[in-house]
Image 1 (cartoon, rainbow, N blue to C red):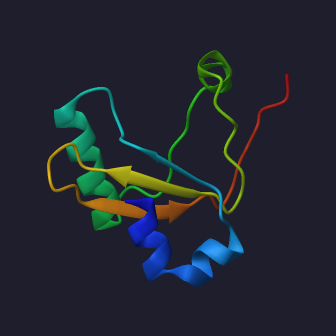
Image 2 (cartoon, rainbow, N blue to C red; image 1 turned 45 degrees about the vertical axis):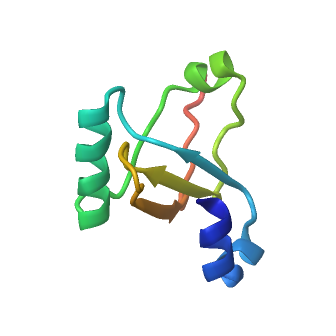
Length: 91
């Protein structure tokens, strides 16, 4: 999925080559519903608890990182967005 996007949008990848590929939500139904809201333009932001990134050993998002979300069906439909803002609350 990333390779197809990168081939179609080399300028975006050159500007920021970092990416993650994942689905939204914690079920097939919710993942597909939330992706529909993203693709319609009604959902333009997301948030996650910092401890979840640490617990999974994942890197924190950075501004400009591509986020590729996929629909939980085959063939997958997808959306690519880029992080515009990363807010980390003060401890």
